[in-house]
Length: 219
Image (cartoon, rainbow, N blue to C red; front, top):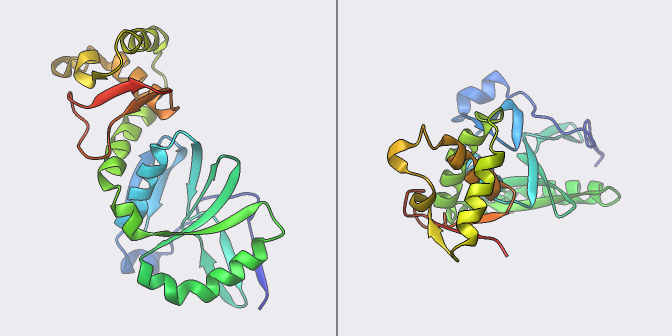
């Protein structure tokens, strides 16, 4: 079967057809690693995966609904594209059982991509839901980052790093007065920017971001 991709080297978010919007639950979000558009997902798990990518400092950007493939006469749009450690990953998100019926299509796409710089990856909904708390935390942080791009945090960044250098581990509340977040907004944004690029680690896997969240410098 002939396989082609209309935009392999120029991923962009393909518009969701109106008929498909009626069939699925669409979710919209602003994301710091997809800053130029409103990101559109077709199910809650897709949006959660954005949060997982937002919290991965090795991922600098991603594109939802990124590539349009033609498999014979059938059209397929990939769920997401992202780069990590130099790898160019086009991914499909499904439940484990749904990937069984998707295998033939996957094989065709993988064969097509063999001679390119791209790889096609299966990511299960189950593996994403295991990181739901982490993902939701990072979706919240991402919305802060995307709405504060014009705020200068040079001095605040130095203050955050100085506080973390003075102790092996501190809590968010030791850096930010949660009762005066407006007055402390530069410190909060600086902390989130440092976490976003992997300079500091926030313990966000098992509990919602709060004053008690542990913060430490990355190794």
